[in-house]
Length: 423
Image (cartoon, rainbow, N blue to C red; front, side, top):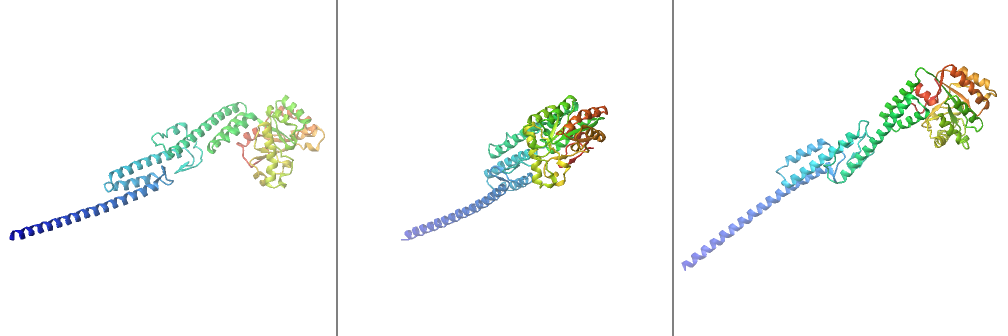
């Protein structure tokens, strides 16, 4: 009996020990699980915070617009501080993303440095012109081979190609310009000056100013020590009188400037082409010969540009000059069009005459170095006076030039919205 009781006590004790041990084990396991959950929660919070911080710098394979190397360094410091507090695989993943971000920011900065203003701002692409200091060599130095094939690389390659294209076009224009400037030092013909002007206008502002100075220097060097005078003819073309005048100019190897009325051109296109072939300059004298100061700015613009456009279409000459009828010009008219007015300082008043003698006398009386002489090729008596005017001026040592040649020599680079009237 005692034996049985003892056995029951032993079994009960064993059951109690087992239950106690099991309970202790459960408590330990539960405590460890709670600890692990808390640890995982803290790790996830750190990972999420790092992800949020990285997201401010880097989204969808692109650096964000405001990312800087300073901000990348700051994030790297935070990441280093979290080393050992997040799983190593997450740490390494952040390191890789940060390294790629740093690479992309450096490439983005290198590409932007090629242009006057930034072209890559995050996912945004903007247009800009390359800096004057940018060369094919500096473009080639921006190597993209280490970048992964993603949209950032596509954008970067697009901007690199744009830089190459711009530099190539700029170099081509500058090489052409250098050839033209060399030719101008030998002879600043109307054609060479027009080509130089149009080429320079395509260049960036900084380069344009430099090349304009070179152009002016070339013209002034050629005409140094010479007395210059410009013969100008208004109101043509005239089918009867203009050909006779051209015969005289061709025979005496004199170049003149013609200010044509647009409505007079139809049917006389061949005369404008002949003038161009001769080396003469052709500009607008408006379409219908109105007093421009009596018009609104848009109406004045139309009068000037309508004739200028037709002249360009026929001759290729696109000089930024016009002559206002009746010498009527004010600041409103000058501002109305991206050109300049060309008046005169010697008026022969040939429209009042009917014989050539007064025209000759007026031209000779007013002649001086830098003069712009006004005549009209629609008057037979004026055309008849021109041979004697040319002969006498040559005897006095004058060199005949077009208005553009005179401006480059006496005033420098062409200024727009200006009124030229002789020197």
